[in-house]
Image (cartoon, rainbow, N blue to C red; front, side, top):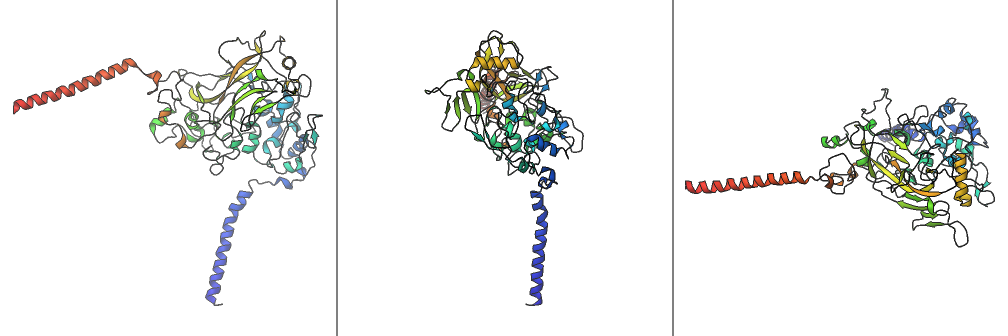
Amino acid sequence: MRIKDVWIAAMVALLLLSSAQAAAPDASAKLLKSTADHSKFPALAGPFDSGPAVTKACLICHTEASRQIHQTQHWKWEYKNPETGQLLGKKHIVNNFCTSVKSNEGGCSSCHIGYGWKDVQTEFNAEEDVDCLACHDGSGKYKKPSGFAGNPVTKDTEFPPGSGKIIRGINLAEIAQKVGKTQRTTCGACHFYGGGGDGVKHGDLDSSLDAPDKALDVHMDVDGNNFSCATCHKTDGHQVPGSRYAPTARDKEPADLRGKVDTSNPATCQSCHGQAPHPVARLNEHTAKIACQTCHIPAFARGGQPTKMWWDWSTAGKLDKDGKPYTVRDDDGYDTYASIKGDFVWEENVVPEYVWFNGTVTYTLTGDKIERSDKPVPINHFDGSAADGKSMIWPIKMFRGKQPYDPDNKALIINHLAGNDDTAFWKNLNWDRAAAKGMANAGQSFSGKVEFIETESAWPITHMVAPKDKALGCTDCHVNNGRLEQIDGVYMPGRSRDHMAGLDKVGWAAMALVLLGVIGHGLIRVVTGKRNK
């Protein structure tokens, strides 16, 4: 081989080595997102026979984590609204899905970030009762089945007892060694499945957001921005901003600036996009009264997973010809009737309803007196008006249904649904016993009578942000029977209700006068032209 050939070969090899070394940092950065490999920690080697045993190991390093968690809404399931004085949170409110957490803690607590919440009387504040894995699991294998008071199952267990159904135990050591930052899937394990199933509750949160494309959500697009929930809901000391009990309806603060102390809600659109996000000034004028979500989320339940829009408890309790509970499913496999829950209506690509909203949400609580009327009882109400100076037009999912009601006490009923006892409705399909037990557990009086009343609950639509070319256009609203047809207190050109007959007459008269003037002027020109000739 000639010297020249050797030299060329050496240069090529050097270039290839340099390229490989240059690529290495990017490759390693992609693989190692954390500075700690938890599989190397002896404390997490296990075996672990319970969730609290794992948490004790976590606390060796993360010494303040549990005490921080104990101060959060995620732990307390409780929030006192400073505007209304109402004590809210899952622990206290009534809903029109599974009606109430109270008296059903053993089942609902599978989505609580703690261990051992089995009933109304449970008091637990030990640091090891905090469930670290619920939010930080990176394996995808962590599960907390309903009915175990928020505890994972670590060995194969027959449940319900005597049913012959086996819940397989999970390996907590394997899971603990793969913890990391929160992900859409960890948040979604509860928030995508709230209300009893995938997509049931929110409408804009379901399993399609595990790995969405740009068409479904421009922020969470796996091939684009790939936001996690915490990208917007930035936590501080485990406090997660963006509560549905007191959302920020109108953010007039500038975009967040790195390094600057900012106490505003980081989960609003304006915290990133500022107050003038559009290149067209006329569009920016719309942001004075219209929430970003109104135009940029044209529909919810768009990812192929429908959402429940109606739940009728009054039809629950039917049995098949063999005297057993049954379920009816549609062609896509979604339940439209279940003996233990009643009738359902599922919908996809749902156009939101729109309301004025100023950030205050008022709830109908246990014990509040309710009079029957021709209108549904509002489980919650989004306060606001065009005239209060702080409201915006917001998109919402309005969920409707029928649920148990005490006609003598004129109050919504707390129902004991979940449990393996003879008073649980899902066990015996007996409303009288389920209502009596639930109201007793809630410390509320019960007349012994169960009727059903129609209710509705409003849910803000904030996820599933569409690409800008799919945002609403002018003719979606500025037309007869457009999106905002029912919104009061604002003049909207093109909308039938804003049609002013008197003004039209004045306009037509003005046009007629102009036309007469033009014709008259033309005639005069013709006549004077002939005379001049």
